[in-house]
Image 1 (cartoon, helix red, strand yellow):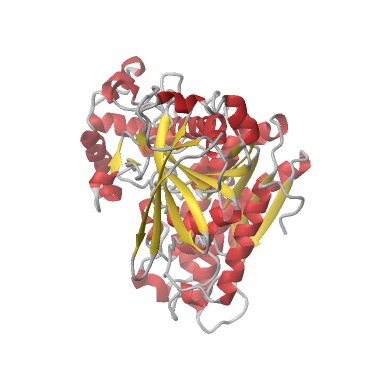
Image 2 (cartoon, one colour):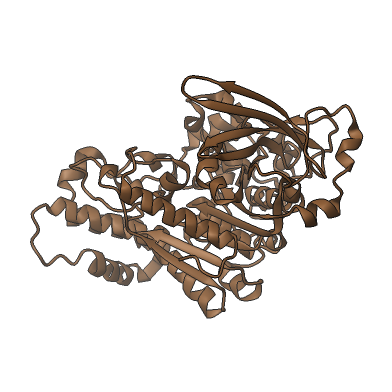
Length: 533
């Protein structure tokens, strides 16, 4: 096997860019990518917008993903494809053209080393060239790199793959000799609408993730990847997605390891029946009779995306429940045939990293970033007056109310109030103390307690588990007078992908050390080294 390429080098005063057009054959057809020079001698092969399923549009809306049709001419895989529609119009206002129902695409970023994978020139007139790398050749001789598949977060309602820039992936991951794949999946009502029955059981977004993993498993060897060393990793809903994928019988065969950052299938927000009520509410608002389950799907298929978004605006993007999110996975007796507590005992055990941050919920309680998903932010005008009374009222009305706990609500409230609101010592800034306790409460409910439960059960069932607690944060992350400071939700993304959810800041020596620790640990784990220290 050999490599032929067409190289165009552009030299400017400030930079050197070497662009290499290249084509890789897959089981479905050829894709044309390009070479990115990341500096420091690092070159990466970039393939953007590869379809892993048929577009879920028209009659395929609200259906499980289907394998893409095969193609003959190379797909130009040189730009990101549109993101999947979020759960409401607010998420697309900045640039509606960046979103589409036709969104089931993935991106592959690989090291650009010679002799790895099924690489051919852009001169594809001679179709016989693509047959010179046999399946055996590609899967045995050239399957070298460990593969890491990133599942984006966003509460199952927002998010995209194009948020994760290939330039940063090349700089941080490709330099460590792994392949990174970023995927997209249907979100919100299009990805998780459910009647709670076999008519529309839901979880389409999870099926999309599984279809993407299957595509990677069957095709990554052509890109120089090892199909037997695939690790899924994600943060928030991406982390809980990774957790769910380890438990689903439909995905088990497609990957080996899992890295779950600040997300667990044991969290109530990550799988519940709230989605059923939200779905019926939306269907009624859009004009589909909810009493006729056998016709509801066909009715929904005939509505425009504008009608969906208008109906979502009228019903509200965020629920009044503590978790806020309206759409997400559920136990459907198929993709998730049983609850996670049971599946942990029954499915094959995968090596797993589970991690949380010290102050997860700052992003939710003291920042507007997560307002598209929850109603947990303390309004800025109320920060300096926040008190024990505010916290106690929140516990009674939202955390342990009579609706959810019945006649046990009083006892549960008392225990939670004793733990989080037992105030004995005087402090200078009482509002900051109570804001911290409120933030700790939300972090425990959403992330810490579910992660601990998953860890304990998996250890009990002899899963290979590694655990981390992230307590480092840069002082530059927060403004001087910010009420509560700490390592918060999503902080790892700054070090992995250059995505900042709070203040953007320049890395100092400590940040660089933390970045190296995160990237080295995760990539070594994916490579299956004996230690991730």
